[in-house]
View 1: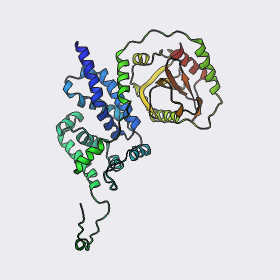
View 2: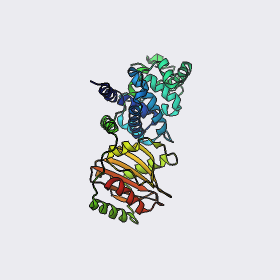
View 3: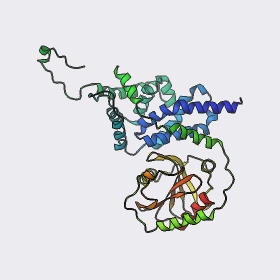
View 4: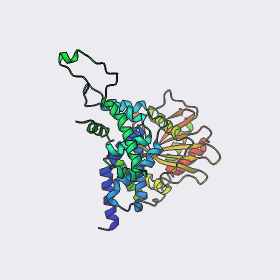
Length: 182
Length: 194
């Protein structure tokens, strides 16, 4: 098999393996299914155009992510909060039962309030499993900045785990044998 | 399941469009097959049909604009004033869709892949020689009837129409009100019919 054939085989595999995680990343970044699909398609298009610039094929995903970032920022919507994506997420539903703390809509609404930069770091860590160092290299920022942005994003998401209202201490709960808090 | 694991699980929840992988593969296949193929045969019958259809657009208003056309207009508004250049080269366009380049007096100022109302298209913006612009949303195959209550009309001051080129290719054409309809007809004829 020639080098070109091997490269084509490899690129086809990257499309198969990475189109889904790239789509989900773009979805959470843009808040739009259509924009996410466009961004991923453009990313693979641009990736093939510049395939000769990929020097480490085993780092294809970070490389594709770099290209996707440019496409995503182009697709960035004027208004991030879009009624259509909220409706899509509601239709998707949640497996958390009556407690909607971790519902897709709740997560979306928290991510919506973050800047693109904070959201991006959060997704690279939690959605793709990149390390601090890998994220720093991909975004060309210091590791310390990665950590602080991640901490900020996690702090916002962590509030999902907390009661949304002031805690009312039920002095009778203990007597009835009920605990409070989580 | 702990907090972080739950978050990760939910981040992976959004469904990926079933046809996305195939669309990416199809675009890549077309990208690899450059340069352009040979010129198409002249088919005057289709040209006449296209021109008659274009002529009938003037003065005809639909009662309601199809959702596909609304989505296209939203995309046009989103990109207004920031034409992002040729995301797809002329050679790729010609190869992907088996079309001809526009007349030399008109320039493609933007080309990009664009999904409107869940339909994948290639969106081209072509500027008139002196004024106005034409937007083409090109799709292999036909636009689903469910997305279109009509085949032509005017919406937000832009005349629009659907062209079925007879080559398993459909085009949603929208043009600014200051474009000469005859110029649009010539453009479509040269790019898709000739």
